[in-house]
Image (cartoon, rainbow, N blue to C red; front, side, top):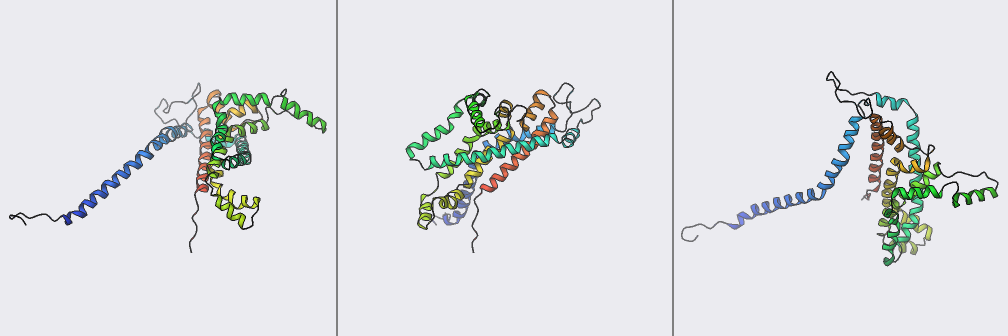
Length: 319
């Protein structure tokens, strides 16, 4: 005390100051999280959630007299909704057969991409660092040209008068087999799908394989494992997150794509994406196209969720 004036005890203010600093840090952390996660979340809401809800609502509406959608309310002010479109889908098996064929095409494409991309990704990951960027550039080089131009190039390669087709038929003729037509077939569709989506498998695999510690392989070799055992016991299990991520990036777009099957498949290679495009652009039956789109979206979300679940690191059980 000085001249009758009491001096406040600073120690009693420390808990209050600490609490204020803690609240300020929490507010700053929350703001930082929103600044980081807010834009992607807003993007998903605006460009995915809202269009999906619009599409789901359109699935229960009547088609318009001249295509498109009929008014939401009829002349009497009643809500103009129906289940006829969904009933029509389930009453016909042709659309489910096409959807099943699309699933098979997408699955074959994914498996072929894994088989072709894994050696390439492993080669890049084990190359000297000075060459890795160049090799990755060569993988993404096809993206520098137009997508349709690349597909039309395969149309020329697989055409009946192409060098590739004539050479293949000449070899088949030697062994007594009938000539084959490659263009406008399921084979052409698979070739196009693999060509388009192969980089989407190489890049996740490379990103995973590059992070592997060589000490694991050295330890396996010291324990007597040969090259094949080292791959299946060490390299491949560690690369499973990359395999899962690449499979999702290939399977989902391959399931809904329509340009490849339109150009290379003809009527034999038609996929569910072609049916959806036909309903919106040609038949102009938007409710039916919306139903097919919703089913495709549900399958894509299921595959993405499964991929995220499989790619999640597993915790080891502790005794």
